[in-house]
Image (cartoon, rainbow, N blue to C red; front, side, top):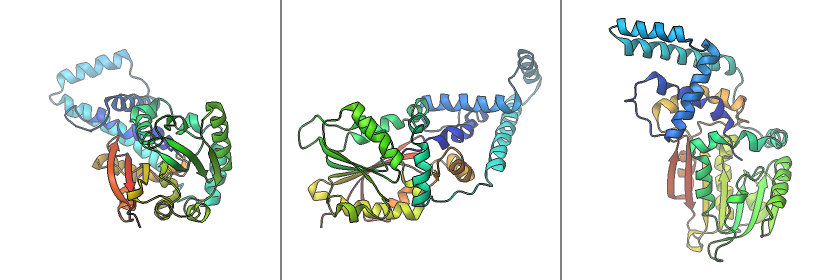
Length: 326
């Protein structure tokens, strides 16, 4: 499952700090993301404070010419705007506490999201964040018998490689999800795409049932995109153990491919994620706790990280992992 709605609601606001600080403040973010963030921040500002009229712009210009510290004054006004927006966001929403969704809650919630899920979790913002290209790059690595955990409505389906030689292409695909509604949407997408390989759909709880249903070392590739944040830390840890159980060993070419929400490595963005995590999970985020320390969950397991790549200042991370052969 993918979860971008919480980013659409909250993260662009903090990146309004790009308007607060002067251009010397460096974030390692795609320029298109910065543009999107600035536009979002401007929209938030206009919503709360109204658009600036030409007369106001002239007065501000005159004030700046007389003010011996125009940059500081401008930064202060912008900071106050940002602080007000953040404060309103936090005070309004933080009463709704975030928690890991139980399997029953997740099943019910995602059944209700199924019809609109693709609209909420794709589109221009996902592209600006680099998530669409990250999906494509990651899924292109999948090969052999593939298990996709938290497959949702099948946002990854058209990215799988079905056409190369037997050693590199996907030969079978098993989609699992906690939500029957999501799997039904994926079935319709498969029919529309006319995919040329066997595809199975299994409703199950990936935190406890993968090994029981499929048996050990059953898949060449296990894929997950943005499910861990909904499971909570313990649930995600349990899911990793289940993945380790069903994937083939390193010597047999087995791999686990993960694209997950994560707490940013940038201290400012990390602070903001911590500040707004409860609100983000409660509205728009569909239960996703987007400041989860995914790296810690992976590193304390027996997984071997072969490759790690960050996106949007570490708000999203890709991991290619393997398991030692028995």
